[in-house]
Length: 501
Image 1 (cartoon, one colour):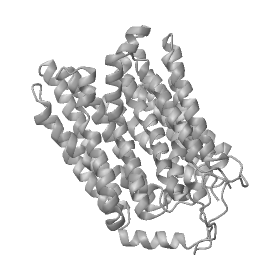
Image 2 (tube, helix red, strand yellow):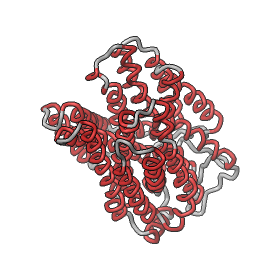
Image 3 (cartoon, one colour):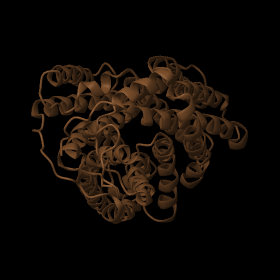
């Protein structure tokens, strides 16, 4: 059985013939708290540094053209190594990888906070991404194997989805507070606090691993997918600064796509694949993963351009910008923790993901009302609330669905798939919408302020299209609730295969 589950007081086999090794009932929600702390550290780190960048640039003296590498170094390492991190958790124990990831993430953060020059800061950010890739899939896999009851699972994934969806906005707020009242270096040091809480909680409450046989690591798959994702993430990052016609951009994206295609071919032929294709071939799981990726496109676009709008057009300070985002994470948390847990077991993910996509689309379109003299309360606030409600429905439902019915030995790979789609979606969204924004501003014939506002509106429209595709594509792929229940019941009646532990 899984290496990260503990026996209950009665270890007798369940009705389906499998012994259930779950965390003690009184510890399950503490495990969720520990996982939530770790997930928050990983998610907010994608945006907390953005607020600190101008201050770090003045302190370390690097050029504007170098600034993007502070963000790219993290996303490049994190996005490309997620599948490997998920499989290592399956092979060597998710609790072990969870703790190692937290400790390493904190250590890399300290190195970054102590950085004396640009190169050291970039190296530290890349190292953060490496350990984040170990941590994030293990966290989601632990959540998957800890909560199996449908009602409890819906509540647990509601909380987890709220953290995943609101973490970026929390990063903007926390980065603004720390930069305003302390130093940009504390935007990195703060991760030590999360790591200490997470490690102590993991050692106390996460069940001890149960050892078992371990299959060999899929080296061919590891090499092809890692290099493939590096090519894709780097290519989109290059497009943001050098344009889509740049030879490096074209070569990186082409090589990345070819290697990902080679990875699929490899995975269909090896005995112990890094990512078993059965995980992504399932219609429900595939639809949920696409929803997660598309939400990443929309969400990262909103955070990027709304931050620009608030700070550059409306003149908000770093702290005011962070505070201005607060309604969105509150809306996400409301939808993910109060609405989804009540409705998901009754109506299923198809209805919630489709509804959430449509609500998020409407909310993003409200950002088109922004003007050079708009007020936050009259224009930005309603858009944040509506968008947050829609995204909260999608994120929590999709994450739950993407890990439902997966074999316990594949939980790490399934969790890594969720994080990979979210990260790649965010990278694509940032690069694609940034390029669209720049082209729209350059091609606008009016005053500079009007041209920039036009660029914001075009970018928001692109984010709205991504949210609409969530409703159309993902909502169309996922099966109706009655069909899903029949399929999951059939899966539950089949004895589980031997695990990787």
